[in-house]
Image 1 (tube, protein in one colour):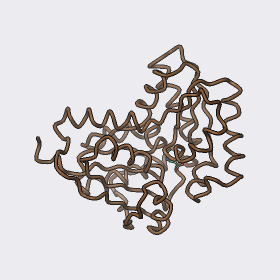
Image 2 (cartoon, rainbow, N blue to C red):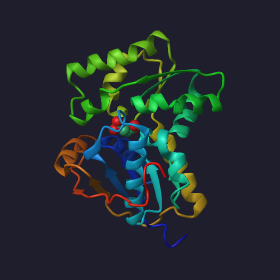
Image 3 (tube, rainbow, N blue to C red):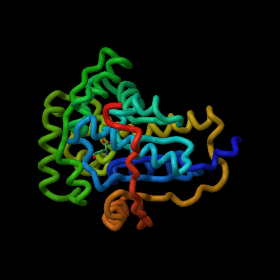
Image 4 (tube, protein in one colour):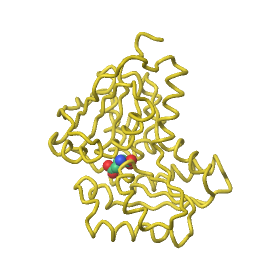
Length: 274
Ligand code: DGL
């Protein structure tokens, strides 16, 4: 076992979406310590430009590197779709994203695949391309869902308006008789109770976080970085208001997290066009 195996894994999202990835980490890799960063001051990411998203991700990566993490999981599909390949070549850390694990899990289940995601992820065609590579015979329908993240971050899961919006976004997928649905945004599994009421019951639901964490375990084993000692408590850090993040995430975590506010230093050498 490497001496650095007890360093934490860094994970990040724009907000509480990454909690769905965190819960998979708790389930599948209970010995790992985790630093969770949520860029709540700048969410939602999914309606921003690729350049802005790349700049934010670079800033977060620099900060996570300073926290001495041994690996980074992008617990955000938008960041994974738009920046994974770029930042992998810029940072000397293993970095894992959600798109390939999600696409692979979906292609193993069905041939008529719906993807609900942020508009930025849908526009990138990241899932469409990844699925085409893995299973060329699969058909894919992508829906950008700009209203979901704000509703989830406002804790409005059970609001009648949310139900109406879910119905609207899912209806073209239901019309096309999908057999598999990918949660192409880590916030969306939080809507599962509503989604399950609206989708026909036979549709496979794919949460890419499950497969991402399976790949994480393999990667840690391979690099001799899996922790076998007791983990320390998850450190939650946000760029916005700590109380708000604590209040909303408590519902899914099952405990009120202690949340720190941190300032990301803008890396002067990394500019958007470099
Ligand atoms: N949860 C993130 C994702 O998976 C980002 C959502 C957003 O901020 O728009 O794409």
